[in-house]
Image (cartoon, one colour):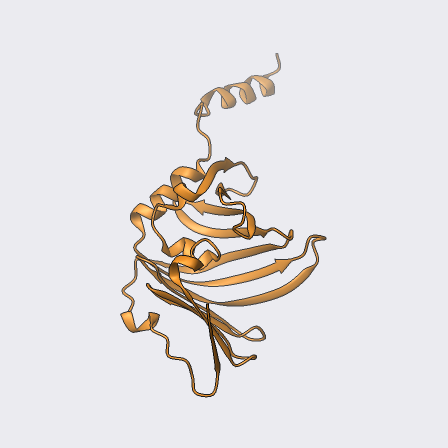
Length: 205
């Protein structure tokens, strides 16, 4: 056996055995250790053929339990805000606000899922995903077949959320990349209050 092959074999034997990326453990740690979060995000939506249909960035904030705020910048300027009881979706271009009870909104948006509690495991089948990008990925497949989406993927590094991917029932994929993330910042409670601007239509369910 050549010297090079011996050195390569020795190096392989020194690698820890049985150590695998564990996205499920990272997800559990995220829920246990994160009671608040603030980050900028970049979001891209592609259709079933992989064609880009939307590209937008913004800022997100959350505070458990169930309070969150996502501010999308132009050209798709929107606000999604939950005060813990209701979820408000404000579309500035349409001058329209849609309000939903939080219970009905849970599971239908990444905002609600991230700000919720560890009950995620009750509604989803979790499994680890192996990807070649140095992140620990977990796949969450909804047990409710009428949820509107097929699965959610969450990518972690050192138990810190880096990316999310959502695939809906039409095959559209939404990729969200987080940056400038602040772990457990102090967030003013008024951040999660919403008052509809004058002159906009308010649609409830």
